[in-house]
Length: 310
Image (cartoon, rainbow, N blue to C red; front, side, top):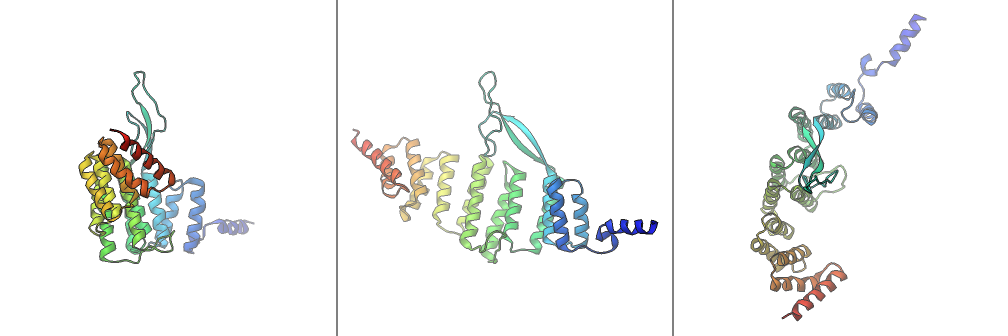
């Protein structure tokens, strides 16, 4: 009976403890089952990751799991009170005012442990070194840096600038886990998304990152209307320098008279500057090139009303 119980106990042990290495697929399955129950950094995950890394140190799924574990473990979520309407582009969890009517809004804020975040980047950098043409890995790294740096995305900006340069110098055949094809336009669209991520953060440093990435992209995609519109928005919104903003919008409209972004922002600029003559100029463009019939008719009606004023 004792021998039977010993045999049954042995069957219950993990295969790795019996001298047999689990397959990569087995590790993935065990990892997914475990994290479903306890989360990306829950009890037992690190032990599994250590065994997985020992057996398959260069397995991409293992490295991504390690990144997820360290990045999640690095985060502590707090609630902070601020006298502003938005924080890092987000609306408050609880909008409030104090007894004197002053704003006292509550926002969610993540604080990161430097050591754990460093380990997360170490795992991601190893994954990228082994899979240099996986664009989704580069983007995941940039997302992590933006989350970590918050209002001052200096490292994220440097990383994205280097990625733009690599795209043009090395001409990699980029792949992406979720996309069948990544061509130059798709790559540029991803970089533009980061421009607006910086813009939406709403801080002085993030505005400079928005401008910096846009200007760097313009060295590669010269005279691109979308990027010139970006610079117009920087001067219009961040600096309130209407003269400089108008220069970029008019540069776009000279070659692309139907560029709706330049037209809309030019119209906004004219109204903020209270320049009726300039407003008429952009209203005429909107009446001709507006995206919808409502836009075109509204612009035409407004233009007619202004023209009737003495």
